[in-house]
Image (cartoon, rainbow, N blue to C red; front, side):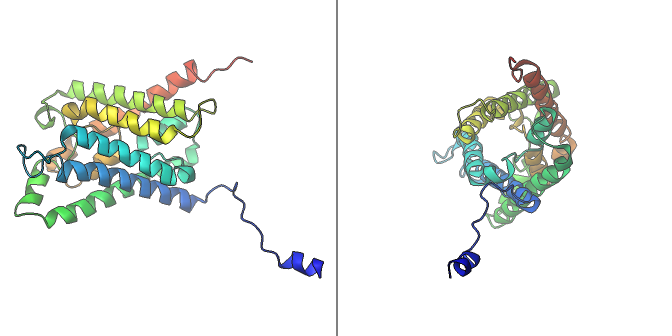
Length: 259
């Protein structure tokens, strides 16, 4: 009888088993969707509601908080499944730092672009149901896209845009590498990363409208005016360069341990 009961007992799931590839890619789609939908949605619908004089508008501070809070929520929700990249620059930076396998880069980057594009597509559908002319005005304004020169919120040049995107993406990856290091205090990584992204937006929204994330830039450029696609290369290359630079420096300076 005991033997029969043992045979019939259900097998407990292995909590230490690695998530499947489908689960990991799905987590990246969902996390990037949350990031773009929350951050860009705030920029489109709440930054100036309904105009600059209305005190209900959340402004730059609200948009910066929105991007940071979405990263915190998404990272706590699915970060344990995929690692919570939600950003091609982060994925590539982690690869350069030796923290991520080359075979998974393409899948993660595609998942992130899909998640961001899905978010802006739904935001576009919502904007189309707004007051007369709302969608056309949003598109003419770039649909919260990143830009430089006349398309920079503060009129900053191409050089300024490249510098700030490289520097701040490098800072962002330094934070990520530091708080996810095995020597770091566990449990606070998502909160720290989200707060750092908020700070990054507070610094750079006036300069480029803040990218530090090619998936976010691609997603908004899809629905922005033609200039957004024309300037998109900066917000793909500069964040990737910044992340790679930070990864190299981190490996050389901070990842070494005494034997």
